[in-house]
Length: 90
Image (cartoon, rainbow, N blue to C red; front, side, top):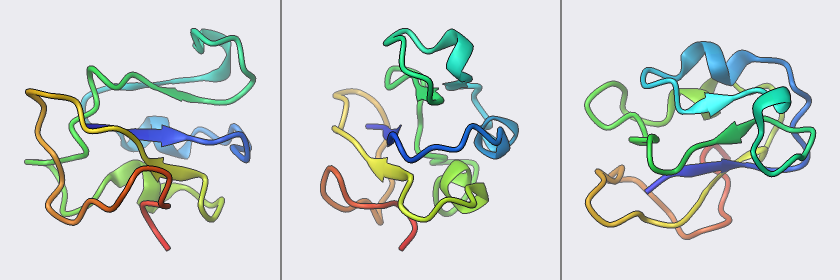
Protein backbone atom coordinates (compact mmCIF):
# COMPACT_ATOMS: atom_id res chain seq x y z
CA UNK A 1 0.00 0.00 0.00
CA UNK A 2 1.12 3.45 -0.61
CA UNK A 3 0.34 6.84 -1.94
CA UNK A 4 2.11 8.45 -4.85
CA UNK A 5 2.94 12.04 -5.67
CA UNK A 6 2.03 13.16 -9.19
CA UNK A 7 3.81 15.58 -11.50
CA UNK A 8 1.64 18.49 -10.35
CA UNK A 9 3.75 18.57 -7.16
CA UNK A 10 5.03 22.09 -6.44
CA UNK A 11 7.88 20.86 -4.18
CA UNK A 12 6.67 22.85 -1.16
CA UNK A 13 7.79 20.30 1.46
CA UNK A 14 4.51 20.15 3.40
CA UNK A 15 4.19 16.40 2.86
CA UNK A 16 7.72 15.61 4.04
CA UNK A 17 7.13 17.42 7.33
CA UNK A 18 3.93 15.43 7.99
CA UNK A 19 5.07 11.90 7.13
CA UNK A 20 5.35 9.92 10.40
CA UNK A 21 7.60 7.23 8.87
CA UNK A 22 9.83 9.40 6.65
CA UNK A 23 8.70 7.65 3.47
CA UNK A 24 8.83 10.84 1.37
CA UNK A 25 11.97 12.33 -0.13
CA UNK A 26 12.46 15.60 -1.94
CA UNK A 27 13.15 16.04 -5.64
CA UNK A 28 16.93 15.91 -5.13
CA UNK A 29 16.61 12.37 -3.72
CA UNK A 30 13.88 11.10 -6.08
CA UNK A 31 15.21 7.79 -7.45
CA UNK A 32 13.31 8.27 -10.71
CA UNK A 33 15.14 11.50 -11.45
CA UNK A 34 11.89 13.47 -11.73
CA UNK A 35 11.74 16.92 -10.20
CA UNK A 36 8.91 16.04 -7.83
CA UNK A 37 8.80 14.57 -4.35
CA UNK A 38 8.71 10.79 -4.12
CA UNK A 39 7.05 8.26 -1.79
CA UNK A 40 8.87 5.00 -1.07
CA UNK A 41 6.05 2.45 -1.32
CA UNK A 42 7.88 -0.05 0.87
CA UNK A 43 7.96 2.52 3.72
CA UNK A 44 4.55 4.19 3.32
CA UNK A 45 2.00 2.97 5.86
CA UNK A 46 -0.81 5.26 4.62
CA UNK A 47 -0.70 6.68 8.18
CA UNK A 48 -2.47 3.56 9.53
CA UNK A 49 -1.89 3.71 13.28
CA UNK A 50 -0.93 7.39 13.11
CA UNK A 51 -3.80 9.36 11.53
CA UNK A 52 -7.26 8.71 10.09
CA UNK A 53 -6.01 9.47 6.58
CA UNK A 54 -2.61 10.06 4.98
CA UNK A 55 -1.20 13.19 6.60
CA UNK A 56 0.82 14.07 3.52
CA UNK A 57 -2.31 14.50 1.43
CA UNK A 58 -4.05 16.51 4.14
CA UNK A 59 -1.06 18.89 4.28
CA UNK A 60 -0.62 19.21 0.52
CA UNK A 61 -1.83 22.56 -0.90
CA UNK A 62 -2.02 21.16 -4.45
CA UNK A 63 -5.40 19.57 -5.12
CA UNK A 64 -5.13 16.01 -6.40
CA UNK A 65 -1.33 15.87 -6.20
CA UNK A 66 -1.21 12.88 -3.83
CA UNK A 67 -3.06 9.85 -5.12
CA UNK A 68 -3.59 6.25 -4.09
CA UNK A 69 -1.07 3.84 -5.57
CA UNK A 70 -0.86 0.05 -5.55
CA UNK A 71 -1.52 -1.97 -2.43
CA UNK A 72 1.72 -3.61 -1.29
CA UNK A 73 1.38 -7.14 0.14
CA UNK A 74 2.20 -7.31 3.83
CA UNK A 75 1.76 -3.57 4.43
CA UNK A 76 -1.21 -1.97 6.21
CA UNK A 77 -3.84 -0.31 4.04
CA UNK A 78 -6.08 2.60 4.98
CA UNK A 79 -9.68 1.46 5.40
CA UNK A 80 -10.90 4.44 3.34
CA UNK A 81 -8.58 3.67 0.43
CA UNK A 82 -9.96 4.13 -3.07
CA UNK A 83 -8.69 2.79 -6.39
CA UNK A 84 -5.23 3.51 -7.78
CA UNK A 85 -4.96 6.97 -9.32
CA UNK A 86 -7.75 8.46 -7.20
CA UNK A 87 -6.76 11.56 -5.22
CA UNK A 88 -6.41 10.80 -1.49
CA UNK A 89 -8.12 14.10 -0.64
CA UNK A 90 -10.88 15.27 -2.96
